[in-house]
Amino acid sequence: MKLTLERTALLSSLGHIQSVVERRNTIPILANVEFVASNSHLTLAATNLDLALRENVDAAVDQDGGTTTPAHMLYDIVRKLPDGTQIEFIQDGAIDRLTLRAGRSEFTLPCLPREDFPLISEGDLPVEFAIMASDLRRLIDKTRFAISTEETRYYLNGVHLHRASTNELAMLRAVATDGHRLAKVEMPLPDGAGNAPPIIVPRKTIQEVRKLVDQTEASVSIAISDARIRFTLDDAVLTSKLIDGTFPDYERVIPEANDKSVAVDTSSFSEAVDRVSTIATETTRAIKLSIENNSMMVSATSPESGSASETVPVNYQGDTLEIGFNARYLLEITKQIDDEKLIMVLADAVSPMLISDSSDPSALYVLMPMRV
Image 1 (cartoon, one colour):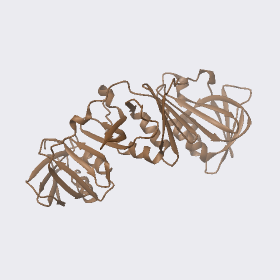
Image 2 (image 1 turned 180 degrees about the vertical axis):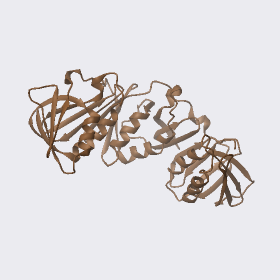
Image 3 (image 1 turned 90 degrees about the horizontal axis):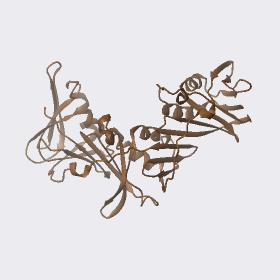
Image 4 (image 1 turned 135 degrees about the horizontal axis):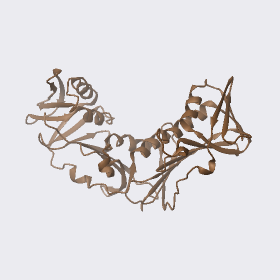
């Protein structure tokens, strides 16, 4: 095998590939990237047995061939090379070694046989549809912060994608919750997605897909079955197992009787919460909102750190209301609001709060209160 390619293109693909590879592996081959040169391109592949990514990079291939070599080591080497460097890879004779040459640098990397590299079997993926990268970014960004990290409730460790109906319109809806907050966002149902089963896409898969769509406006092809999902875009194909579980009936926790609407400047409110929460107890991050006519006081008290308060003007007419929240959860929701005004809809001090975005009625957030 012999090929030459430019450092920037290789680094971008290796950045995606190496993040799939787990840092600790009991199976040595899973620490490696599959490295195959043919037909004027280099194909890189990695897997952790639940998730697999394959990506092509343009290259000048003088001799076809393939091997596997440590993914993180290769990424670190390429990352430290100067911009614009032409990188040459050579493997001849010793199949357990891969030589990398770049300028005055030369590295010899260990290899394992390509034949030992595992592949995820996709099986039959009967439902396939396309979605613009910008729409996929939006679905991910407005929900992923609410994914649970509690492994015991594994069915919450991902984003729930499913068909839904809003005002008699068919929608593709994404939902995530960790029991403390819930994020729901939707878009018109893409052509071909009418028979899509409800699925839960794992957190790790969501993270990797988000990296792939970060700087593209291309269309993304999505194929799914009850057990697997495949994303295809540009020169990359990502295949993943789905979470085998039932997502809870999240609509039951979305309050319908909230009748107290508070409009506040998104930026001013977020900055006030951020400043006041500096005082909040590290374990609970608890802050209190005291709302009365056209005024909201954000406050926090800590036995160790003292107290803090800040008043923010709001648009509200009604009874005085005091309610507590986790400041970090509140800030993560405010980051998703694109409009200058944030709308909070409350009932009382112990009921969940609704937060909506005037510029994006298809997105909705629910936050559980806490005692302060």
